[in-house]
Image 1 (tube, rainbow, N blue to C red):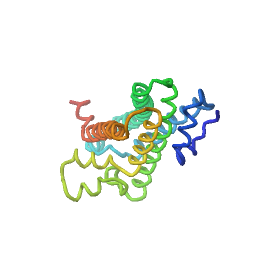
Image 2 (image 1 turned 135 degrees about the horizontal axis):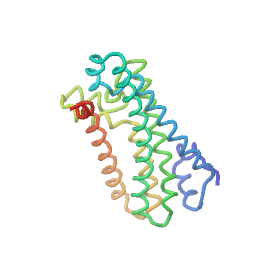
Image 3 (image 1 turned 90 degrees about the vertical axis):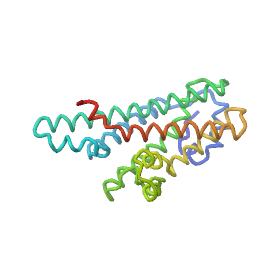
Length: 221
């Protein structure tokens, strides 16, 4: 069966009902390769323009010549690798959870489902770049997230990053995950909601933790 990407985004319930009865879809490998490629490009651009390099900036300004170029290159390369790892984690681990909760379908089919929430998250990453280039707004200060409100009432950096990870795009992803898990399992709606909320809360916490870590300090300590 042809993989109907836009139908999956606009009408997830209709797509998921057809997904249950279809053994395989066409063009899945090419679409997954496209996700890895697009993610590496987006994260590479993020590294190239210096987003997320605040904790490295002190070392950048003290370096010069070849050392400066190498540090910029390492940061750029690290971002590309992070983009690849980002897709791999989001493809494999949620699919594993789905497969454990609903073993009626193959693990490969559950991996395919993750194409939709990942596409939404990549769209958000692209928006982060536009906000930084046009307005100088960092990701945790996006007007589509709770980070802006958090910065008005608190000063704790980790909490600001955590709230900045909660956005309208993440809510869209949670909605898609909720529908998909409800359709492919027999779990009650509140159980599915708790599972989806716990999984995403863990992801937000990890994002906030990595944002606060000074990796450059660890590498050169």
